[in-house]
Image 1: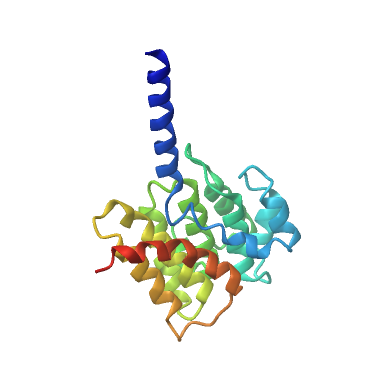
Image 2 (image 1 turned 180 degrees about the vertical axis):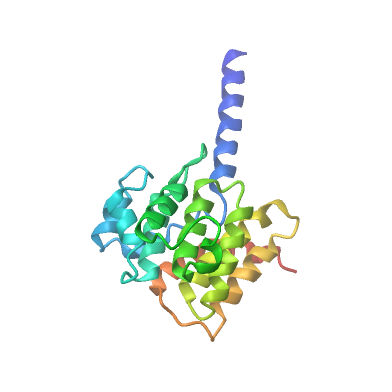
Length: 206
């Protein structure tokens, strides 16, 4: 009887952890397409906590946005939540005193907005309502950036897991893939990692 109970508990534990991990934000490790870059390689081994070196990289306007997003992706996620987004914002405000909590969404660049939005979404992927607001603003400021639009749409697709129409997840991400107005500023192998997961929802489209 005890063995049967133990097996039953293990079964539900596995199901719970699968459901936590299986989502647009947590199942798309596209950073692997950038593992030849040192900061990505080290970030993947930092246990998910952002460092000063990584914050410096993210706030340097000279660094490619796709690599910045890959860095955030490599930091991963945690069921218990993380607090990398507030650290990013505090570091950015110290570096750029003209920015503050009140004007950030309007005065920040598209890259700064999407980095914050993505960090915030990865900090708490169960609640991305606020992250979506910043992601949308980033997309409006950079309408031709493939990287920003892909990650911004990925963040917006996260709550769709709770809807009955999972086809929407596939449809929205696929619209980015087929949008010829976007300029490809991400390595194709990394974009393919995102589509490799989201294409799984195509079977729900009828």
